[in-house]
Length: 373
Image 1: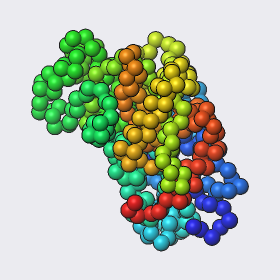
Image 2: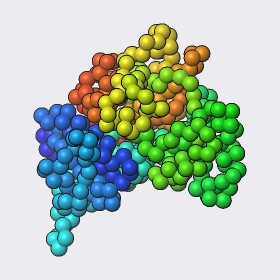
Image 3: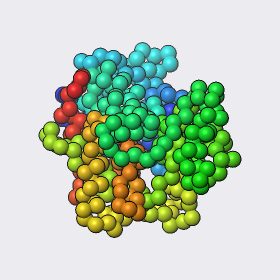
C-alpha cells in the first residue's frame, strides 16, 4: 500500500463501448460519494478512441437536458507501466519526458460494456499487479457475453429461457438457416423475440421483433454494436433484479432485497430511453411477492454469481413467470451505479447506503490478493 495517509483510488470511466456516457454518469456519482477523509481519488478518463487521459476539471459527468457526458482527449495521455512492484501511472505529454503521476492502491474500473466490463481492463490490471474492484478476467468475460453466460448457467442447472446465437460468419454465410432456427423459438407461432448484441448492455441495440419480416433489420441493428448477436424468445413475466456482493472476510456472497422494474409508459421493453432519459420507470423494493419467492430469487441470484466465479459485485436480472418460476435473464458484473440505479437502491433498502456500499467495494478489493486466486 502507498506510504501516504490516505488510500489512493483510481476511478476509471468512459471507454470505447457504446455505454461510454453511462460509465461517465456512474463515475460522477461514485466519486461524489467516496469518503475524501479516507481516500484520495485519481480520476482517469478513457476517451472513445481508447486513449487514457487526465480529464479536465470542468468535465461534466451527468445527464443534463438530455445531453450525455463524454470524455474528451484534453489533458495529458496516461500510460500504465507493467511493473507489479510499482503500481504507478505515467503522464505522457507530447515533446516532454514522461512523469510519474502517482502510485495507486486500488482501481475502480467503472466501465460498462466491451473494452472494460468484459475482462480486458481486468487483464491489464492483473498484468500490472494492481488490485481492482469487481470480477476478474474470466467472470467479466463470461458475464459480458450473453451466450457463454447462459451456457455456464445451463451447465450448473440454473434456469434460462430459449435462445439462439448468431455469429458473424453464420450470419454472413448461413443467414437463411439462422432465420429458420430463430423462427423455431416461436416467432412463427406469434411469440415475439428480442434481438440483442451478445456483448453490450444498457439496452443498446435491442429490438423486439413480432414478425419474420423485421428479423433481418433487427439483427443488422444489433450487429452495429457487436458482430455476435443473441436472439431470445420473449418470456411472459415480471422483470425482477437482485444485487449480489462478495462476502466479507471470505464469507458467502450476499444478496440484496430484489426490485421490480415498473414502466409507466407504453414501452415494449426496458430500453435505453426508458432507463436513462425519460424517467418513465420506477422500482418497487421489494416487489409485491410472497416472502418465499423473495428468498428464492435471492438464493438463485447468489448461485448465478457463484456459477460465474464472480467477485466484488453484480446485478442479476430475472423474469418471474405467472406460474411462479424464476428465469435468469442476464448478469451485470459492473452494473449502473448512480444513486438512481437499481443496484445501489436495492442495497440501500437492504440496509447499506450508497457511501457505505462504495466503501465496502473498495475495502473488499484491497483485501483481495493480486495474481491467481
